[in-house]
Image (tube, rainbow, N blue to C red; front, side, top):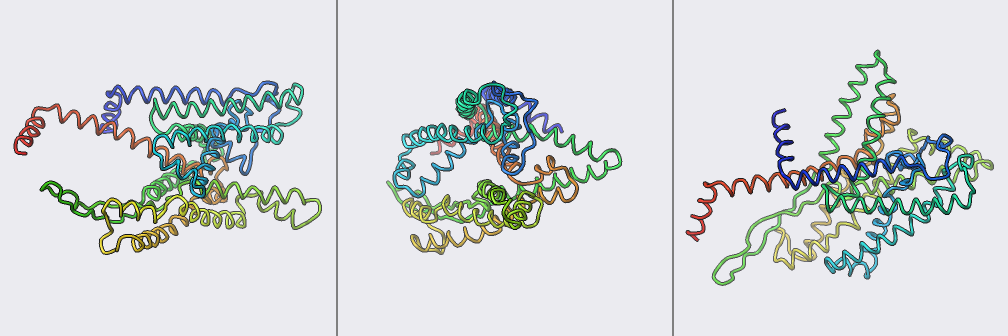
Length: 439
């Protein structure tokens, strides 16, 4: 406990880190307040706030802004969609590949294209959102006027969320876009845990404690899977320049067990929404369509989870293949005069890395599929659906990923502070001076 208190003291003793944390909290507060501001012309009491399927996932990520019909109803999701599109285009189109390799100038152009694409996507999604999720009896003004004004307001809200995310990245701590997603998910946790506790009553107190303990161990397992890497040793060739020997050191290439992150679950979740939607179109004409619609509307059914897990495994291999390029790694190693011990540079190195990547992607994909279906398993064991969302799936993976990334940034500030403190001490300064004299 004393160590935690000392760490907190150290964090707030660094002015820059303290200011960044305060800035982040203020930006997040503005974002959360905006999620409660309802669109003009709506009777909020008539909104249907029970969201399921992909809409339920969006509402969880957006912290209730989706079901509240707020000015941040779509939040940062159109920007994420635009980023995914640009990332995929960077793999298949030479024009975007060239921009990626142009350094800072190319990155700025890609960011600008992403922002413009975000506006286009938001215009389409906001129109569909208004038409598909807001009941007609909840609209208090003319339909056409409400649709036009709401499309512009939601688009402006998404652009403002994008701006907040960029400001958090520049002036705060952590990745701004990820922080906005995380705070939306975290905002649902207190209410879900209270509802779970109330549902158990006093007679189920022991069961509630067991559920918390299971959740704790699941979080530990997901952290381990997220951080797991396979190290490929890399040897740098020695070079003699001006009578001095450079290089020769050994390093490693870290290949993550789950290189695809949370993207396979998001892709699979989007596709899982289609069977129930298509079945509803032909539900009046076919008993099979009714059966399919019933099965795929229930995310706890074994058919739903089997297809969901299969899609996640397929998308994990697909996304890993387009984001981690063994040939690019091999070419980069060759240009830097490095090699894998016992493997020839070039084609053999590429095949060696590809084989290792395939072998570690399989257990990573299976682990990701298991994490994705854990909420359904939790519901089958009697846990409320709101609380079960934190037992796995997209919510838990995003939470853990963002928290780990933020903690690493905080730790880097603390390490820099300790390094400066040592350099200012007389003993270390004297030692460095003597070293210079020897050289």
